[in-house]
Amino acid sequence: MILARMENVEVFNSEGKGRGLKATRESWAGDVIFAEPAYAAVVFDNLAHCVCHSCFKRQEKLQRCGQCKFAHYCDRTCQKDSWVNHKQECSAIKKLGKAPNDNIRLAARIMWRIEREGSGLTEGCLVAVDDLQNHVDDFDTEEKNGLMEDVQTFLDYWPSQSKQYSMQLISHILGVISCNGFTLSDQRGLQAVGVGIFPNLCLVNHNCWPNCTVIFNNGKIELRALGKINKGEEFTVSYVDFLNLSEERRKQLKKQYYFDCTCEHCTKGIKDDLLLATKDEEEKPAENVVKEVIQFSKDTLEKIDLARAEGSYHEVVKLCRECLKRQEPVLAETNIYLLRILSIVSEVLSYLQMFGEAAANTKKMVDGYLKIYHPNNAQLGMAIMRAGVTQWHAEFIEVGHGMICKAFAILLITHGPTHPITKDLEAMRAQTEMELRMFRENEFVYYKMREAALSNKPFQVMQEPSKEAVPNVFNKNP
Image 1: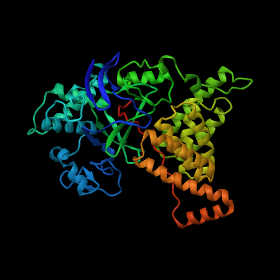
Image 2: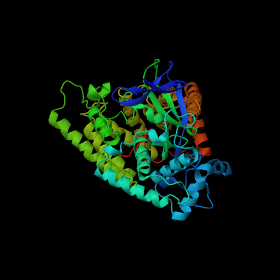
Image 3: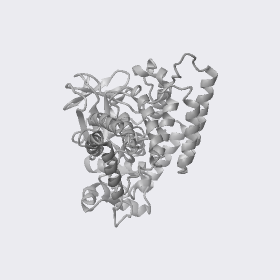
């Protein structure tokens, strides 16, 4: 049964999943199925001073709201654009004396919009916010207690002059945020900076091997096709990173999203063999040796988390080197524990400008990723891009250019040509292509020119390693 329709998509009852979205026409890789502005969105608490509360761009210098002293903006234009959403928030923050957490602020922005426009369908939406799933009945005791605390904080924050709503509706909205919040990233897509509610996107169901991806681009969420999608086919996205064993993904999805994944990759354990693979040699490693290496890897990853949290990057490198020494004779290039260590050490080595060693590790990492991820996976594209930049810094010009071209081809599909990071990558591709030509014509002259160019401007230091993974577009906390 068709429940609602707009160009390219229609809502239907998806067997075993509830509502879903399916195609009303054929789509191809890179097509934007739809782009949707947030119904409501807020900046994360800890980034409130360095991210614009209107356009969500990170900026070094922002103008602070003179009234509440909490909201920050790029300029007067951003402040003016945000005023309809910030006006009541501003007064509420002043009255409370501080800003509540981002979930409370987002819930309030949703309620203020309902107060202004009513609770029915808004223009361009296939479903009303108050008709979204909240899964409150599935919450465990700890989650329910946390919800009640948030409801009380919301009531303390909500102005008496605003329309008053029932605790049931407030609980529903907070539950919707918990289960359906989407991460907003900065302009480069490298850091999670906020959370928003996008009603249409909430209708897209999960698949571990999806046919679509979701990207935050120029203030809107875009649902983009990863390959050919036939008319009548359901659109799907992945709520979790594929780089996990099927059993781990299913546990994560059950815990965070309250459903049992029945996708083909989970039910058949597709690629689990690669993620657990050991060296395929004449003499395979003994089972007890494999178990010891896996346990050593798990213990090392815990130590690495502590060292990263403290910013002890040389300690991280030391731990990774010790782990790789144990892993490489035993684990195959696609083994998940080897790939996790390679990802961490290559990022940290690049930051420490130890590019030669970093380049060797990124090459191994990319080789493994290419055998596991969907060929048009956004995280794969980002990983290859970072690897290409590392190779360039290490002066492996041909390998670096090849990786940058590969990343560009993927990001054209997953991010589109207008996304800031795709534009950056296009400029990088043109630069490395020019350098590669020079390198092939006269290697000696090339290195002399490169040396002169780098000495005339500050050397570009790699971004400090994040203490978190690349932001997922889904904001549910584990």
